[in-house]
Each structure stands twice: as structure tokens, then as C-alpha cells.
Image 1 (cartoon, rainbow over the protein chains, first blue to last red):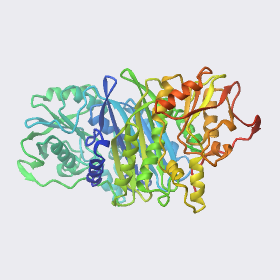
Image 2 (spheres, helix red, strand yellow; image 1 turned 120 degrees about the vertical axis):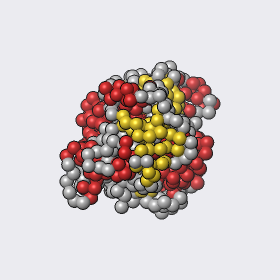
Image 3 (cartoon, rainbow over the protein chains, first blue to last red; image 1 turned 60 degrees about the vertical axis):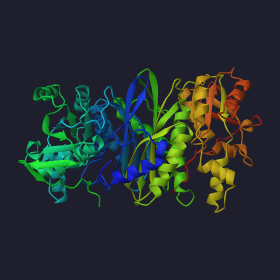
Image 4 (cartoon, rainbow over the protein chains, first blue to last red; image 1 turned 135 degrees about the vertical axis):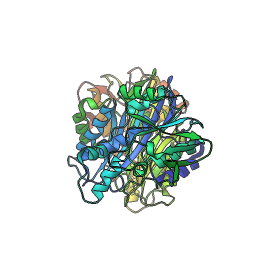
Length: 305
Length: 305
């Protein structure tokens, strides 16, 4: 769930009352047979979330699955697999290519395609429901004042790739790949969940916007020192903080979580992990650059028309 | 999954190879933490599965959820809940009404809304992923020669309601309700699973077409005596056998399953259960009327343009 849809969805769920359960997080977390199931759904639509002239059908499938699987990562869950509904305008090979991309991404993180549906639609869509188990489920809430705030990976690549595409230019290959085939941080999410993560969220709306979501859910302020934010080469920290569709993880860890522990995550094959700030009493996100306050950038709105 | 999409989906999944798991049934059945999860996804699209001039938005939501939940019923599963992606053309109240219908149907069968996504789409769509647990999971395969073939409820109402709508007439209220607010047979499905069901399928494509699916999956012939098929008032058996979107259950039960046991299901609050035929050596569906063979009607294609 991204951008301006978030508030409308919350209103819809609020009206459901007791018909709704476990909402307001990246995943629903449901106790089942001695474990916790993590479940989420994420729709990708042509013209809203992707354009067919910028991505291959295989990439469209991979990205849709990656975005959905990233919600499992944020819950600290291990994926079982995905269920996929495809809408395609005709009976050509696009459906197979999209599904191949979905399957490749699911397998890449240890999951499978568990089911699907197919319908004729004027515009392409890929709706992906993800299913996993979480031995140590993590939510957006749970961060406390004093916790350290950390981020995986390096930010800003997707925004830069998109900027190039919008300008009619060709993005540099590595950057394009980073945008077109995002790698959801399942292994890192599960590792962090098992090593004390108090609250976690994936960066689909961008660092600044998603830090605000985590702050609100946890009832804390999140302070981020922009100069500490790991940036894609050539991207400045404020642009990195505004870049969406990153699918990196923002995590609150106890103050005692060390650089040595972070290095252990990286060695364990997970991801680079960088301390970029801390939680404090208060509300909202406080960005600073060299100690000076910086206004938060707007949230990510994909490239909705 | 309905009508002509079935074969294309099967081809797509076949190409996924080891990236796919548990496909080819109404639900994926996945062992998790000492129980079996049942999972399925079902997309409903404006112009393919529904028209906004024939149904209220609340009914559109209910029907989409009912269709998806019916897959859980066919697996003998108890629902946990649904995840729902909605596509709506504008920010009006339709999304709330659709979701209210989804929620009402989920609650009606003991489930909840576990998560959702929302996107702007030229045409409405409702994609519903369902999640449940199956203590005695039932598949389409598993029927054996000699098993009795039974069906829940009475068939033909939805086709008759649709016929009236197509002709510009107003369907009788009870029949319209049967079509607009189908009640997936969750309680009956779970009861049948616990009482020896060998194979089961829900009637989304219609009795004749879905009996063929069960026959194929089980490697048997399914013989149905049309004069035994319980029909909606005023519907003849062949029309009842062709009527889709019934969301009743077709089930193969051991030969010893008795009328007394069927009466017990009805008393237990489940559904009327009628013996309409048996499984035999061979393949395909054999319809008879008064002992004479009758050609099978075509499968159900919703009202696709």
C-alpha cells in the first residue's frame, strides 16, 4: 500500500469494524497451528505502478512479486509462496512472461507460486498475495525512545533510474536493474527479527515517508541524520530519502545493537545494515543534515498520471 | 478459475516447473505448523464477471468474496479470512461499499478481512485471496469407481436470474438474491471433509463442467442421473446442470454414505445433500435422463462480452 491510497484504505478498514483483523501493518499476522502466518496483498497496475514500454513482462512480474514479498520481509517472515491474479488484454504470451517473472522472484527468496487466476482486462494488472511464517513476527509498532534506527542497502537508485526514463534517457545498467528487479530483503528481515528487531517497515514509499509510518505506529519520533544514509552513487541524501520502491528495510533495534552485529548480518548473506538515527520521545520524522533540521520530502507516488 | 481461462492457466503453471507448488486444485494445500493451510485467489472484473448496472457495489463485493471462499469450501477448509485488492476508477464511496460486501460475506462464513490494497483502475475489479485451515483436506482427485456422487443445494437459480437480466426483465427476488449474494458452503464443506469426502469441487463452471474436472482429476467417469438433480423451481435439469456461479459443492463419498448421513448434514445446519450419481471406471461425464444418455451442455462462461 503506497502513497495517498493509504488513508483511504485505513478509512475503509475502519468501517469494517469487527469484520477486519490484523490490519495497519505490512502484513496480517495470524496465529495458526503453533506458528504465526504472515499475509499480505499488493496490486500492480499498468499506468499506475508500471508501464509496458519501460519494463519487459518478465520484469513486470518480478517487480510485482518483489513489492509484495517485501511486506513479508518487513514482518520478519520466511516466505512460503505467492498467489497471483493476472489481468491481460489478450491471449498472447504476456501472461506466461509475467508469471515467469513472478515465479523467478518467488524462487529467488525461497518461495513458490501456490495458485493463480487469469482474466481478460484492457490494462495489464498483477495482483500478488504473499504467504509466509514468522517465528518472531515484527510490526511497525514496537519501537521505543532510545532505539537505534537502521536501514539495509543503499538508497536512491530507483528514483534515479526513473528520472532517466522520464527524461527519455537510458538508465545506467546497474541502476536500471536495481529498479526493474528489486530484491526484497527476506533473509535480512528474518535475521533482524531473530536478533531483536523492535519495529520494521519496508521502504516502498521512501525513507522519509515510511519512517513517518513507523514513528506513528510506534508512538515515537524518528530522528534521521541524512549524512549517514547510504546512497546510491551520485545520489544526494535528501533525494535518497524521497526515493520510493526501494524495498529496503528500516528497522528499530535496541540501543545496544552494535556495528559488529550489523557486520554479522552482512556476512550471513543478508544485506549491508547502516545506523542512520534513533527513536526519541515525540512524534513524526526529524531529518537533519550536519545537525541542521531539513524539511521532509514528499511521499512517493509511483508515477501515477 | 472458470471457463476457457483454465487451460491457459494450466499451461502457464506447467511452464513454471519447480517454481510452482500445489496447483491444479481449487486451493493450494500447504502443511504449516502441524495443520494444513488452504489458499486460493479469485479475480472478479467489471465486464467479465460482473456489471455495475445489475449489482450494487456491496453485492459485487459479496459475490467476489463468495466465489473465492467457495474454493475453501471445496477443500473442506475452515476460513481464517480474505485479502482483497480493489481497483476503482475514482475516490468515491464504491470502494467502501465493495469492501463492506466482502467483509459481510467473510463474516457470514466465520472469516475476517485480513488485508487489502487499493488502486485506481478504469474498470472496477475485486481480487480476493482466501486463507483457511483444513483438518481433513479434500482435493478434486481422490474419487474411486463405486463412490456415490452428491450435490448440495438446488441448482439453476443463477442461470435463471441471469437469463431474466439479459432479457431486460426483473428476476424474482429470491432468485435474484441467490445469484447476487451466493452463500459459499463452508460449513457443509468442512462437515463433508470430516465425514469421508473423497473428492470435492465447487460448482463455479456448472455441474456438468465441474463434474468433468473432478472426473479428470480423479481418473474416473462420473455418471449423473439428471432426474435426481435438485433444481430451482421452474428450472429443468439440463439447464440446472449448465448453470454456473452456483457455488454449491459436488462431492464423491464412499458407496456406504447414506441418506441418513445426508440428513445429518442438513440438520447440522449445513445444506441439503442429494445423491445424483456415482463414479465408475472410465473417463468423462455421463449424463442420463430417465436412463437415456444426454449430451453435456457447454461450460459456463460468465457473461463475457
